Image 1: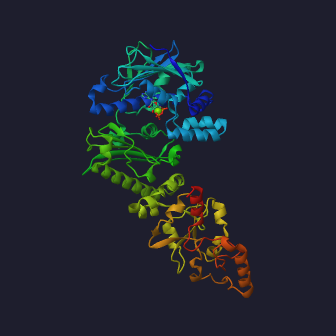
Image 2: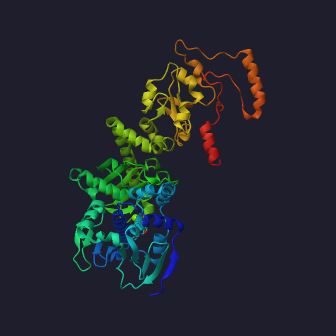
Image 3: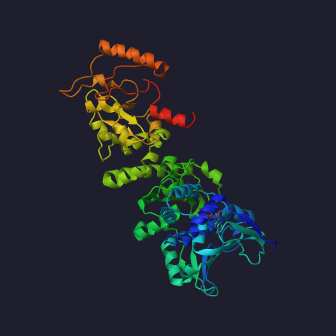
Length: 552
Ligand code: ADP
Ligand code: MG
Protein backbone atom coordinates (compact mmCIF):
# COMPACT_ATOMS: atom_id res chain seq x y z
CA UNK A 1 0.00 0.00 0.00
CA UNK A 2 1.00 3.57 -0.72
CA UNK A 3 0.69 6.08 2.15
CA UNK A 4 -2.71 7.76 2.25
CA UNK A 5 -3.07 11.18 0.74
CA UNK A 6 -5.05 13.73 2.75
CA UNK A 7 -7.34 16.10 0.89
CA UNK A 8 -9.86 18.78 1.81
CA UNK A 9 -13.50 18.61 0.87
CA UNK A 10 -14.87 21.13 -1.60
CA UNK A 11 -16.30 24.12 0.30
CA UNK A 12 -19.92 23.14 -0.38
CA UNK A 13 -19.31 19.62 0.90
CA UNK A 14 -17.75 20.98 4.07
CA UNK A 15 -20.85 23.09 4.64
CA UNK A 16 -23.16 20.17 3.97
CA UNK A 17 -21.14 17.94 6.29
CA UNK A 18 -21.23 20.53 9.02
CA UNK A 19 -24.98 20.55 8.70
CA UNK A 20 -25.13 16.74 8.86
CA UNK A 21 -22.88 16.38 11.84
CA UNK A 22 -24.69 19.06 13.79
CA UNK A 23 -28.05 17.94 12.62
CA UNK A 24 -30.67 17.67 15.29
CA UNK A 25 -32.91 16.10 12.68
CA UNK A 26 -34.56 13.21 14.41
CA UNK A 27 -35.13 10.94 11.45
CA UNK A 28 -31.57 9.83 10.93
CA UNK A 29 -32.81 6.58 9.36
CA UNK A 30 -32.58 8.23 5.97
CA UNK A 31 -28.85 7.54 5.78
CA UNK A 32 -29.67 3.85 5.12
CA UNK A 33 -32.01 4.75 2.30
CA UNK A 34 -29.29 6.91 0.73
CA UNK A 35 -26.51 4.33 0.97
CA UNK A 36 -28.72 1.50 -0.25
CA UNK A 37 -29.90 3.58 -3.16
CA UNK A 38 -26.28 4.27 -4.13
CA UNK A 39 -25.49 0.56 -3.89
CA UNK A 40 -28.49 -0.30 -6.06
CA UNK A 41 -27.59 2.43 -8.58
CA UNK A 42 -24.09 0.94 -8.80
CA UNK A 43 -25.58 -2.50 -9.53
CA UNK A 44 -27.81 -1.06 -12.23
CA UNK A 45 -24.89 0.76 -13.83
CA UNK A 46 -22.94 -2.48 -13.95
CA UNK A 47 -25.93 -4.34 -15.37
CA UNK A 48 -25.94 -1.83 -18.20
CA UNK A 49 -22.19 -1.83 -18.87
CA UNK A 50 -22.02 -5.60 -18.81
CA UNK A 51 -24.50 -5.77 -21.67
CA UNK A 52 -21.66 -4.93 -24.01
CA UNK A 53 -18.93 -6.53 -21.89
CA UNK A 54 -20.28 -9.53 -19.93
CA UNK A 55 -16.88 -10.20 -18.36
CA UNK A 56 -17.36 -7.09 -16.21
CA UNK A 57 -20.04 -8.75 -14.10
CA UNK A 58 -17.81 -11.57 -12.91
CA UNK A 59 -18.94 -11.11 -9.32
CA UNK A 60 -22.31 -12.78 -9.69
CA UNK A 61 -25.86 -11.53 -9.84
CA UNK A 62 -26.39 -8.05 -8.47
CA UNK A 63 -27.08 -7.72 -4.77
CA UNK A 64 -26.72 -5.44 -1.80
CA UNK A 65 -25.68 -6.80 1.58
CA UNK A 66 -26.02 -4.99 4.88
CA UNK A 67 -23.87 -6.42 7.65
CA UNK A 68 -24.27 -5.50 11.32
CA UNK A 69 -21.57 -5.75 13.93
CA UNK A 70 -22.97 -4.84 17.35
CA UNK A 71 -19.74 -5.60 19.17
CA UNK A 72 -17.66 -3.25 17.08
CA UNK A 73 -20.61 -0.84 16.68
CA UNK A 74 -20.29 -0.96 12.92
CA UNK A 75 -22.59 -1.23 9.95
CA UNK A 76 -21.45 -2.13 6.46
CA UNK A 77 -23.22 -1.77 3.14
CA UNK A 78 -21.72 -3.78 0.35
CA UNK A 79 -22.65 -4.03 -3.30
CA UNK A 80 -21.23 -5.94 -6.25
CA UNK A 81 -21.93 -3.10 -8.64
CA UNK A 82 -19.79 -0.95 -10.86
CA UNK A 83 -17.38 0.23 -8.13
CA UNK A 84 -15.19 3.31 -8.16
CA UNK A 85 -11.56 3.93 -9.08
CA UNK A 86 -9.43 6.12 -6.85
CA UNK A 87 -10.07 9.13 -9.09
CA UNK A 88 -13.81 8.42 -9.05
CA UNK A 89 -13.80 8.22 -5.25
CA UNK A 90 -12.24 11.68 -5.10
CA UNK A 91 -14.69 13.06 -7.62
CA UNK A 92 -17.81 11.39 -6.19
CA UNK A 93 -17.12 11.70 -2.47
CA UNK A 94 -15.20 14.96 -2.30
CA UNK A 95 -17.36 17.28 -4.37
CA UNK A 96 -21.01 17.95 -4.99
CA UNK A 97 -21.91 17.10 -8.54
CA UNK A 98 -25.66 17.09 -8.33
CA UNK A 99 -27.30 20.35 -9.20
CA UNK A 100 -30.17 19.35 -6.94
CA UNK A 101 -27.78 19.33 -4.01
CA UNK A 102 -26.63 22.81 -4.93
CA UNK A 103 -30.25 23.95 -4.85
CA UNK A 104 -30.61 22.24 -1.51
CA UNK A 105 -27.56 24.07 -0.16
CA UNK A 106 -28.97 27.37 -1.28
CA UNK A 107 -32.21 26.64 0.50
CA UNK A 108 -30.30 25.65 3.62
CA UNK A 109 -28.13 28.76 3.49
CA UNK A 110 -31.19 30.95 3.52
CA UNK A 111 -33.10 28.82 6.02
CA UNK A 112 -32.95 29.05 9.78
CA UNK A 113 -31.02 26.27 11.52
CA UNK A 114 -33.98 24.19 12.60
CA UNK A 115 -35.58 24.53 9.20
CA UNK A 116 -32.34 23.53 7.51
CA UNK A 117 -32.15 20.25 9.32
CA UNK A 118 -35.79 19.55 8.48
CA UNK A 119 -34.87 19.94 4.84
CA UNK A 120 -32.60 16.91 5.06
CA UNK A 121 -35.62 14.72 5.53
CA UNK A 122 -37.40 16.11 2.50
CA UNK A 123 -34.44 15.94 0.24
CA UNK A 124 -32.01 13.23 -0.70
CA UNK A 125 -28.66 14.43 0.52
CA UNK A 126 -26.88 11.32 -0.56
CA UNK A 127 -23.73 9.74 0.68
CA UNK A 128 -22.83 12.47 3.15
CA UNK A 129 -25.86 11.66 5.28
CA UNK A 130 -23.77 8.78 6.64
CA UNK A 131 -22.10 11.34 8.89
CA UNK A 132 -25.35 11.87 10.75
CA UNK A 133 -24.78 8.52 12.44
CA UNK A 134 -21.08 7.77 11.96
CA UNK A 135 -17.96 9.49 13.20
CA UNK A 136 -15.87 7.73 10.61
CA UNK A 137 -16.74 6.26 7.23
CA UNK A 138 -14.42 3.96 5.28
CA UNK A 139 -15.08 3.16 1.65
CA UNK A 140 -13.28 0.35 -0.11
CA UNK A 141 -14.04 0.04 -3.80
CA UNK A 142 -12.95 -1.68 -6.95
CA UNK A 143 -14.09 -0.60 -10.36
CA UNK A 144 -15.39 -3.49 -12.48
CA UNK A 145 -12.70 -4.57 -14.93
CA UNK A 146 -9.91 -2.87 -13.00
CA UNK A 147 -6.97 -4.55 -11.28
CA UNK A 148 -6.77 -1.76 -8.72
CA UNK A 149 -8.74 -1.16 -5.57
CA UNK A 150 -8.93 2.08 -3.60
CA UNK A 151 -9.70 3.18 -0.10
CA UNK A 152 -11.37 6.39 1.06
CA UNK A 153 -11.79 7.42 4.66
CA UNK A 154 -13.07 10.45 6.55
CA UNK A 155 -14.35 11.63 9.89
CA UNK A 156 -16.49 14.19 8.06
CA UNK A 157 -14.68 17.10 9.65
CA UNK A 158 -13.15 18.78 6.62
CA UNK A 159 -10.65 16.31 5.20
CA UNK A 160 -10.53 12.79 3.83
CA UNK A 161 -7.83 10.39 2.76
CA UNK A 162 -7.50 8.28 -0.37
CA UNK A 163 -5.00 5.57 -1.22
CA UNK A 164 -4.79 2.55 -3.42
CA UNK A 165 -5.56 -0.75 -1.76
CA UNK A 166 -4.80 -4.40 -2.13
CA UNK A 167 -7.34 -6.05 -4.45
CA UNK A 168 -7.26 -9.07 -2.16
CA UNK A 169 -9.14 -7.12 0.51
CA UNK A 170 -11.66 -5.61 -1.89
CA UNK A 171 -14.72 -7.20 -3.49
CA UNK A 172 -14.20 -8.54 -7.00
CA UNK A 173 -16.03 -5.45 -8.13
CA UNK A 174 -18.19 -3.07 -6.19
CA UNK A 175 -18.08 -1.07 -3.02
CA UNK A 176 -18.02 -1.56 0.73
CA UNK A 177 -19.11 1.35 2.86
CA UNK A 178 -18.19 0.82 6.51
CA UNK A 179 -19.77 3.07 9.12
CA UNK A 180 -18.16 3.46 12.54
CA UNK A 181 -21.34 4.39 14.37
CA UNK A 182 -21.53 7.15 16.95
CA UNK A 183 -22.35 6.12 20.46
CA UNK A 184 -25.92 7.35 20.21
CA UNK A 185 -26.42 5.48 16.92
CA UNK A 186 -25.70 2.02 18.30
CA UNK A 187 -29.30 0.95 17.60
CA UNK A 188 -28.39 0.71 13.92
CA UNK A 189 -26.72 -2.57 14.75
CA UNK A 190 -30.00 -4.08 15.97
CA UNK A 191 -31.23 -6.56 13.47
CA UNK A 192 -34.99 -6.01 13.69
CA UNK A 193 -34.69 -2.29 13.68
CA UNK A 194 -32.47 -2.23 10.61
CA UNK A 195 -34.60 -4.82 8.84
CA UNK A 196 -37.72 -2.72 9.39
CA UNK A 197 -36.07 0.47 8.16
CA UNK A 198 -34.83 -1.22 5.02
CA UNK A 199 -38.22 -2.76 4.28
CA UNK A 200 -39.95 0.57 4.81
CA UNK A 201 -37.56 2.73 2.88
CA UNK A 202 -35.93 0.51 0.32
CA UNK A 203 -38.24 -2.46 -0.17
CA UNK A 204 -38.58 -1.66 -3.85
CA UNK A 205 -35.12 -0.90 -5.08
CA UNK A 206 -34.66 -3.10 -8.15
CA UNK A 207 -31.85 -5.14 -6.60
CA UNK A 208 -32.25 -7.82 -3.91
CA UNK A 209 -31.14 -6.84 -0.40
CA UNK A 210 -29.59 -9.21 2.13
CA UNK A 211 -29.01 -8.70 5.85
CA UNK A 212 -26.40 -10.30 8.09
CA UNK A 213 -26.98 -9.78 11.80
CA UNK A 214 -23.30 -10.45 12.59
CA UNK A 215 -20.23 -10.54 10.33
CA UNK A 216 -20.12 -14.34 10.52
CA UNK A 217 -23.89 -14.88 10.31
CA UNK A 218 -25.66 -16.16 7.25
CA UNK A 219 -27.11 -13.59 4.89
CA UNK A 220 -30.88 -13.45 4.87
CA UNK A 221 -32.80 -11.95 1.95
CA UNK A 222 -35.13 -9.18 3.11
CA UNK A 223 -36.16 -7.61 -0.20
CA UNK A 224 -36.52 -9.42 -3.50
CA UNK A 225 -35.55 -6.68 -5.95
CA UNK A 226 -38.52 -7.54 -8.17
CA UNK A 227 -39.53 -4.76 -10.51
CA UNK A 228 -42.71 -3.32 -9.02
CA UNK A 229 -43.95 -2.07 -12.37
CA UNK A 230 -44.19 -5.58 -13.77
CA UNK A 231 -46.72 -6.60 -11.13
CA UNK A 232 -50.45 -6.16 -11.75
CA UNK A 233 -51.93 -3.02 -10.23
CA UNK A 234 -54.34 -4.98 -8.09
CA UNK A 235 -51.45 -6.58 -6.23
CA UNK A 236 -49.74 -3.33 -5.31
CA UNK A 237 -50.70 -1.39 -2.19
CA UNK A 238 -50.65 2.39 -1.85
CA UNK A 239 -47.70 2.09 0.55
CA UNK A 240 -45.75 0.08 -1.98
CA UNK A 241 -46.34 2.73 -4.61
CA UNK A 242 -45.29 5.48 -2.22
CA UNK A 243 -42.19 3.59 -1.19
CA UNK A 244 -41.27 2.98 -4.81
CA UNK A 245 -41.99 6.58 -5.74
CA UNK A 246 -39.63 7.78 -3.05
CA UNK A 247 -36.82 5.53 -4.18
CA UNK A 248 -37.21 6.17 -7.89
CA UNK A 249 -37.91 9.88 -7.65
CA UNK A 250 -35.63 10.83 -4.79
CA UNK A 251 -38.63 12.62 -3.30
CA UNK A 252 -39.88 12.06 0.21
CA UNK A 253 -43.45 13.26 0.01
CA UNK A 254 -46.48 11.35 -1.26
CA UNK A 255 -47.27 11.04 -4.94
CA UNK A 256 -50.16 13.34 -5.87
CA UNK A 257 -50.89 11.26 -8.94
CA UNK A 258 -49.78 7.74 -9.84
CA UNK A 259 -49.74 6.52 -13.42
CA UNK A 260 -49.23 2.82 -13.88
CA UNK A 261 -50.09 1.14 -17.15
CA UNK A 262 -48.84 -1.03 -19.92
CA UNK A 263 -49.02 0.15 -23.51
CA UNK A 264 -49.70 -2.59 -25.96
CA UNK A 265 -49.95 -2.70 -29.73
CA UNK A 266 -47.31 -1.45 -32.11
CA UNK A 267 -44.96 -0.72 -29.23
CA UNK A 268 -45.04 -2.41 -25.88
CA UNK A 269 -43.85 -0.72 -22.75
CA UNK A 270 -44.74 -0.29 -19.10
CA UNK A 271 -45.02 3.07 -17.43
CA UNK A 272 -44.86 3.77 -13.73
CA UNK A 273 -44.79 7.48 -13.15
CA UNK A 274 -45.76 9.93 -10.46
CA UNK A 275 -46.55 13.57 -9.99
CA UNK A 276 -45.15 14.74 -6.64
CA UNK A 277 -47.23 16.39 -4.01
CA UNK A 278 -44.51 18.93 -3.28
CA UNK A 279 -42.32 20.95 -5.61
CA UNK A 280 -38.98 19.19 -6.13
CA UNK A 281 -35.95 21.36 -5.40
CA UNK A 282 -34.50 21.06 -8.85
CA UNK A 283 -37.66 22.11 -10.70
CA UNK A 284 -36.20 25.39 -11.87
CA UNK A 285 -32.64 24.27 -12.51
CA UNK A 286 -31.32 25.99 -15.62
CA UNK A 287 -30.92 22.68 -17.43
CA UNK A 288 -34.61 21.86 -16.82
CA UNK A 289 -33.75 18.20 -17.22
CA UNK A 290 -36.44 15.55 -16.95
CA UNK A 291 -36.23 12.78 -14.41
CA UNK A 292 -37.82 9.86 -16.21
CA UNK A 293 -35.75 6.71 -16.36
CA UNK A 294 -35.61 4.40 -19.32
CA UNK A 295 -35.40 0.65 -18.77
CA UNK A 296 -35.26 -2.04 -21.41
CA UNK A 297 -36.70 -5.34 -20.20
CA UNK A 298 -35.94 -4.37 -16.59
CA UNK A 299 -32.39 -3.21 -17.25
CA UNK A 300 -31.81 0.43 -16.41
CA UNK A 301 -30.46 2.19 -19.50
CA UNK A 302 -30.46 5.93 -18.94
CA UNK A 303 -32.21 8.81 -17.26
CA UNK A 304 -31.26 11.15 -20.08
CA UNK A 305 -33.58 9.88 -22.79
CA UNK A 306 -35.88 12.90 -22.40
CA UNK A 307 -38.94 10.71 -22.43
CA UNK A 308 -41.09 13.68 -21.55
CA UNK A 309 -40.80 17.24 -22.83
CA UNK A 310 -39.17 19.69 -20.43
CA UNK A 311 -42.44 21.28 -19.46
CA UNK A 312 -43.46 17.92 -17.95
CA UNK A 313 -40.23 17.60 -15.97
CA UNK A 314 -42.12 17.40 -12.68
CA UNK A 315 -43.19 13.86 -13.60
CA UNK A 316 -40.93 11.27 -11.97
CA UNK A 317 -40.75 7.60 -12.78
CA UNK A 318 -39.79 5.18 -15.48
CA UNK A 319 -40.64 3.55 -18.76
CA UNK A 320 -39.66 -0.06 -19.39
CA UNK A 321 -39.60 -0.91 -23.08
CA UNK A 322 -40.00 -4.40 -24.47
CA UNK A 323 -39.05 -3.38 -28.00
CA UNK A 324 -35.76 -1.53 -27.77
CA UNK A 325 -32.72 -3.74 -28.31
CA UNK A 326 -30.72 -4.17 -25.12
CA UNK A 327 -27.36 -3.82 -26.78
CA UNK A 328 -28.03 -0.47 -28.33
CA UNK A 329 -25.98 2.51 -27.20
CA UNK A 330 -27.55 5.40 -25.34
CA UNK A 331 -26.79 7.64 -28.32
CA UNK A 332 -28.56 5.29 -30.73
CA UNK A 333 -31.57 5.13 -28.47
CA UNK A 334 -32.03 8.88 -28.77
CA UNK A 335 -32.64 8.48 -32.49
CA UNK A 336 -34.80 5.41 -32.28
CA UNK A 337 -38.35 5.61 -33.64
CA UNK A 338 -39.36 3.36 -30.76
CA UNK A 339 -38.27 6.04 -28.30
CA UNK A 340 -40.12 8.67 -30.35
CA UNK A 341 -43.31 6.61 -30.06
CA UNK A 342 -42.80 6.21 -26.32
CA UNK A 343 -42.20 9.94 -25.91
CA UNK A 344 -45.39 10.76 -27.74
CA UNK A 345 -47.49 8.11 -26.02
CA UNK A 346 -46.37 8.93 -22.48
CA UNK A 347 -46.67 12.70 -22.97
CA UNK A 348 -50.21 12.31 -24.27
CA UNK A 349 -51.10 10.05 -21.41
CA UNK A 350 -49.80 12.49 -18.79
CA UNK A 351 -51.91 15.28 -20.27
CA UNK A 352 -55.07 13.16 -20.46
CA UNK A 353 -54.56 12.09 -16.85
CA UNK A 354 -54.33 15.75 -15.89
CA UNK A 355 -57.53 16.45 -17.80
CA UNK A 356 -59.21 13.63 -15.91
CA UNK A 357 -57.94 14.99 -12.63
CA UNK A 358 -59.28 18.45 -13.40
CA UNK A 359 -62.67 16.96 -14.28
CA UNK A 360 -62.93 14.62 -11.30
CA UNK A 361 -61.06 16.33 -8.50
CA UNK A 362 -61.07 20.09 -8.83
CA UNK A 363 -59.34 20.68 -5.54
CA UNK A 364 -56.61 18.17 -6.28
CA UNK A 365 -56.14 19.71 -9.67
CA UNK A 366 -55.71 23.20 -8.25
CA UNK A 367 -53.09 21.86 -5.85
CA UNK A 368 -51.30 20.40 -8.83
CA UNK A 369 -51.63 23.64 -10.75
CA UNK A 370 -50.36 25.70 -7.87
CA UNK A 371 -47.18 23.59 -7.79
CA UNK A 372 -46.53 22.96 -11.45
CA UNK A 373 -48.66 25.32 -13.52
CA UNK A 374 -45.72 27.62 -14.14
CA UNK A 375 -43.76 24.70 -15.59
CA UNK A 376 -46.63 23.40 -17.69
CA UNK A 377 -47.11 26.85 -19.22
CA UNK A 378 -43.63 26.59 -20.76
CA UNK A 379 -45.30 24.15 -23.14
CA UNK A 380 -47.48 26.93 -24.52
CA UNK A 381 -44.55 28.27 -26.50
CA UNK A 382 -42.44 25.12 -26.70
CA UNK A 383 -44.98 22.61 -27.91
CA UNK A 384 -47.17 23.97 -30.64
CA UNK A 385 -48.82 20.59 -31.23
CA UNK A 386 -50.24 20.39 -27.71
CA UNK A 387 -50.91 24.07 -27.22
CA UNK A 388 -54.66 23.80 -27.31
CA UNK A 389 -54.69 20.99 -24.80
CA UNK A 390 -52.36 22.94 -22.53
CA UNK A 391 -54.53 26.04 -22.76
CA UNK A 392 -57.44 23.87 -21.70
CA UNK A 393 -55.47 22.74 -18.66
CA UNK A 394 -54.33 26.24 -17.71
CA UNK A 395 -55.84 28.03 -14.73
CA UNK A 396 -55.58 31.72 -13.98
CA UNK A 397 -56.02 34.36 -11.39
CA UNK A 398 -58.11 37.19 -12.79
CA UNK A 399 -60.15 40.20 -11.85
CA UNK A 400 -63.06 37.76 -11.56
CA UNK A 401 -61.34 34.84 -9.83
CA UNK A 402 -61.43 36.00 -6.21
CA UNK A 403 -59.83 33.24 -4.11
CA UNK A 404 -60.47 30.72 -6.86
CA UNK A 405 -59.03 30.09 -10.29
CA UNK A 406 -60.43 30.58 -13.77
CA UNK A 407 -60.08 28.46 -16.87
CA UNK A 408 -60.15 29.96 -20.35
CA UNK A 409 -63.49 28.29 -20.83
CA UNK A 410 -64.79 30.27 -17.86
CA UNK A 411 -63.27 33.41 -19.32
CA UNK A 412 -64.78 32.86 -22.75
CA UNK A 413 -68.21 32.27 -21.30
CA UNK A 414 -68.20 35.63 -19.55
CA UNK A 415 -66.87 37.76 -22.40
CA UNK A 416 -68.73 40.99 -23.11
CA UNK A 417 -70.53 42.01 -26.27
CA UNK A 418 -68.03 43.10 -28.94
CA UNK A 419 -65.13 41.82 -26.87
CA UNK A 420 -62.75 40.17 -29.32
CA UNK A 421 -59.67 39.50 -27.24
CA UNK A 422 -58.64 37.90 -23.96
CA UNK A 423 -57.12 40.66 -21.85
CA UNK A 424 -54.28 40.13 -19.45
CA UNK A 425 -51.93 42.10 -17.26
CA UNK A 426 -48.48 40.88 -16.25
CA UNK A 427 -46.54 41.70 -13.11
CA UNK A 428 -44.74 39.96 -10.31
CA UNK A 429 -47.13 40.69 -7.47
CA UNK A 430 -50.76 39.64 -7.63
CA UNK A 431 -52.13 42.25 -5.21
CA UNK A 432 -50.31 45.11 -6.85
CA UNK A 433 -51.39 43.90 -10.23
CA UNK A 434 -55.00 43.63 -9.14
CA UNK A 435 -55.02 47.24 -7.98
CA UNK A 436 -53.23 48.61 -11.05
CA UNK A 437 -54.90 51.69 -12.55
CA UNK A 438 -54.51 50.08 -15.95
CA UNK A 439 -57.42 47.80 -15.12
CA UNK A 440 -59.91 50.52 -14.27
CA UNK A 441 -61.49 50.90 -17.68
CA UNK A 442 -61.85 47.13 -17.92
CA UNK A 443 -63.33 46.85 -14.47
CA UNK A 444 -65.79 49.63 -15.20
CA UNK A 445 -67.05 47.70 -18.20
CA UNK A 446 -67.11 44.39 -16.36
CA UNK A 447 -64.41 42.95 -18.62
CA UNK A 448 -62.38 40.22 -17.01
CA UNK A 449 -58.59 40.62 -17.06
CA UNK A 450 -56.23 37.70 -16.44
CA UNK A 451 -53.59 38.55 -13.86
CA UNK A 452 -50.37 36.82 -14.88
CA UNK A 453 -47.59 36.71 -12.31
CA UNK A 454 -45.31 33.86 -13.41
CA UNK A 455 -42.08 34.71 -15.25
CA UNK A 456 -43.04 32.35 -18.03
CA UNK A 457 -46.24 34.30 -18.72
CA UNK A 458 -44.37 37.10 -20.46
CA UNK A 459 -43.11 34.58 -22.98
CA UNK A 460 -46.14 32.62 -24.01
CA UNK A 461 -48.51 35.57 -24.27
CA UNK A 462 -46.25 37.08 -26.92
CA UNK A 463 -45.91 33.81 -28.83
CA UNK A 464 -49.01 34.34 -30.93
CA UNK A 465 -51.17 32.14 -28.78
CA UNK A 466 -54.92 32.33 -29.16
CA UNK A 467 -57.78 30.49 -27.53
CA UNK A 468 -60.89 29.61 -29.46
CA UNK A 469 -59.91 32.13 -32.13
CA UNK A 470 -59.43 34.94 -29.62
CA UNK A 471 -56.00 36.51 -29.31
CA UNK A 472 -54.42 37.39 -26.00
CA UNK A 473 -53.98 41.13 -25.58
CA UNK A 474 -52.10 43.01 -22.90
CA UNK A 475 -53.93 45.85 -21.16
CA UNK A 476 -50.71 47.84 -21.29
CA UNK A 477 -50.34 47.53 -25.03
CA UNK A 478 -51.50 50.90 -26.28
CA UNK A 479 -55.15 51.88 -26.28
CA UNK A 480 -57.19 48.80 -25.87
CA UNK A 481 -60.39 48.33 -27.72
CA UNK A 482 -62.50 49.70 -24.95
CA UNK A 483 -64.42 52.25 -26.99
CA UNK A 484 -66.19 49.39 -28.79
CA UNK A 485 -67.44 47.89 -25.59
CA UNK A 486 -70.28 49.76 -23.96
CA UNK A 487 -70.19 50.93 -20.36
CA UNK A 488 -72.87 49.35 -18.20
CA UNK A 489 -75.97 51.50 -17.95
CA UNK A 490 -75.72 54.47 -15.59
CA UNK A 491 -71.93 54.71 -15.94
CA UNK A 492 -70.35 57.45 -18.00
CA UNK A 493 -67.71 57.28 -20.66
CA UNK A 494 -64.43 59.04 -20.05
CA UNK A 495 -64.74 62.63 -21.24
CA UNK A 496 -63.45 63.75 -24.64
CA UNK A 497 -60.37 65.94 -24.34
CA UNK A 498 -61.38 69.49 -23.70
CA UNK A 499 -59.21 72.49 -24.57
CA UNK A 500 -57.68 72.54 -21.11
CA UNK A 501 -56.84 68.87 -21.35
CA UNK A 502 -55.25 69.34 -24.77
CA UNK A 503 -53.02 72.08 -23.53
CA UNK A 504 -52.08 69.97 -20.54
CA UNK A 505 -51.13 67.16 -22.91
CA UNK A 506 -48.90 69.50 -24.90
CA UNK A 507 -47.27 70.60 -21.68
CA UNK A 508 -46.69 67.01 -20.56
CA UNK A 509 -45.18 66.11 -23.95
CA UNK A 510 -42.76 69.00 -23.75
CA UNK A 511 -41.80 68.13 -20.23
CA UNK A 512 -41.22 64.43 -20.88
CA UNK A 513 -39.72 64.81 -24.37
CA UNK A 514 -37.93 61.56 -25.35
CA UNK A 515 -39.00 59.69 -22.29
CA UNK A 516 -42.38 58.91 -23.79
CA UNK A 517 -43.51 58.34 -27.34
CA UNK A 518 -46.95 59.86 -26.80
CA UNK A 519 -49.30 61.34 -24.23
CA UNK A 520 -52.99 60.58 -24.75
CA UNK A 521 -56.38 60.83 -23.19
CA UNK A 522 -57.34 57.34 -22.18
CA UNK A 523 -60.63 55.56 -21.80
CA UNK A 524 -59.26 52.97 -19.55
CA UNK A 525 -58.85 55.04 -16.40
CA UNK A 526 -61.84 55.76 -14.22
CA UNK A 527 -60.27 56.76 -10.92
CA UNK A 528 -56.50 57.22 -11.25
CA UNK A 529 -55.35 60.37 -13.10
CA UNK A 530 -52.58 58.77 -15.14
CA UNK A 531 -50.85 55.54 -16.06
CA UNK A 532 -47.87 54.37 -18.11
CA UNK A 533 -48.44 52.05 -21.05
CA UNK A 534 -46.24 50.39 -23.64
CA UNK A 535 -46.54 51.45 -27.27
CA UNK A 536 -49.31 49.78 -29.26
CA UNK A 537 -47.03 47.29 -30.98
CA UNK A 538 -44.21 47.63 -28.52
CA UNK A 539 -42.97 45.09 -26.10
CA UNK A 540 -44.99 44.26 -23.10
CA UNK A 541 -43.57 46.13 -20.09
CA UNK A 542 -43.06 43.02 -18.00
CA UNK A 543 -41.24 41.29 -20.84
CA UNK A 544 -39.16 44.42 -21.36
CA UNK A 545 -38.08 44.31 -17.70
CA UNK A 546 -37.30 40.61 -17.95
CA UNK A 547 -35.15 40.96 -21.02
CA UNK A 548 -33.36 43.93 -19.48
CA UNK A 549 -32.65 41.80 -16.39
CA UNK A 550 -31.31 39.02 -18.60
CA UNK A 551 -29.00 41.56 -20.25
CA UNK A 552 -30.59 41.32 -23.69
P1 ADP B 1 -26.22 10.66 -6.02
O1 ADP B 1 -26.43 9.24 -5.66
O2 ADP B 1 -27.50 11.40 -6.10
O3 ADP B 1 -25.38 10.89 -7.23
P2 ADP B 1 -24.68 10.62 -3.61
O4 ADP B 1 -24.12 11.66 -2.70
O5 ADP B 1 -25.57 9.62 -2.97
O6 ADP B 1 -25.41 11.36 -4.80
O7 ADP B 1 -23.49 9.86 -4.29
C1 ADP B 1 -22.50 10.58 -5.00
C2 ADP B 1 -21.83 9.73 -6.04
O8 ADP B 1 -20.97 8.79 -5.43
C3 ADP B 1 -22.74 8.87 -6.88
O9 ADP B 1 -23.28 9.59 -7.96
C4 ADP B 1 -21.80 7.77 -7.36
O10 ADP B 1 -21.08 8.22 -8.48
C5 ADP B 1 -20.87 7.63 -6.21
N1 ADP B 1 -21.23 6.48 -5.35
C6 ADP B 1 -21.75 6.55 -4.13
N2 ADP B 1 -21.95 5.31 -3.62
C7 ADP B 1 -21.53 4.45 -4.57
C8 ADP B 1 -21.47 3.01 -4.68
N3 ADP B 1 -21.90 2.21 -3.69
N4 ADP B 1 -20.96 2.49 -5.82
C9 ADP B 1 -20.53 3.28 -6.82
N5 ADP B 1 -20.57 4.63 -6.79
C10 ADP B 1 -21.05 5.20 -5.68
MG1 MG C 1 -27.33 8.69 -3.89
